[in-house]
Length: 362
Image (cartoon, rainbow, N blue to C red; front, top):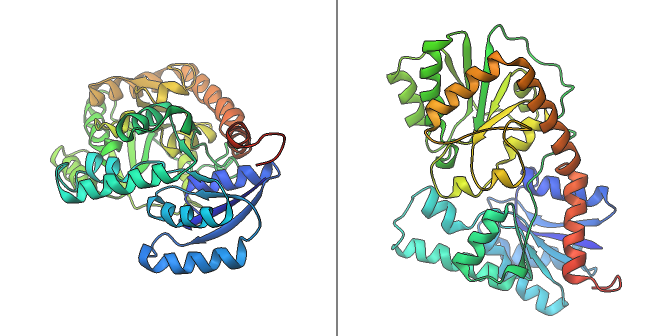
């Protein structure tokens, strides 16, 4: 089996990096036929075409990684010339991200309709679509009219060589709850700040560290200033090579607490990564997260209202060291077994074999 990763994508982005690594660990040949994700599509089409002709001439599957909706039509054209199948891993539709979650344009705008059309074309031109959760699969099928047997679930997983529990941690004097991310609406970072305000009144020794920046960051930082909190610290985004040590220094890691529709359909990378580091994770109770994890067994799930329940969850886990340790250990064992690169690669191979291979042939 051979897969050609095709399109404009960031090879360091965790989703495709985990998949490529997992496939190689399972003996699959992986060919890179891509460009950096910042390359505009009207420039990259001729570049991708000639790169494909020169470097990916062997028979293989096309694999279009996350956010590559605009690259699927070119892959379709090449697939018609070469009789190859297209596997598309959108991670999230453009419409869901830009319109529903980020709210950049109204749903009835031409930009919204155009993004929905781009998604629709990409789904229609693909032979197999991957979804990170069952909740996302159901959304794809319902919103875009996709047949259920065309979509398979492949969790995002994590890189167990980068995120591992044996890293030396920076010593901190205070009990620390860590939030890191790109401050998207689905992250609900404002709920973390509000929880910090509640916690400060009951246990001022607990410290909150928020790492990153993004769309909601100015609002979140302004909220912290308005509440005059001295138990919260903001840090700039860290390179992936430095992030594991920051996680290692935390006592608890925080997931997502957004109220957007998309928040209920995703399980972000950082949940798997934090568990891989052997840290207990607190996150919102959503349909997506309950597909993979169980409350008080390998994760701590909270319902709305998030600020109040997050505060109480942090206070409980600080008090109950045994519970904190058990959740951390069970979570680590689960992700190491089921969501490491080798496990994700094995799952994808089974999906491809079930969908396309008969008697060992495409």
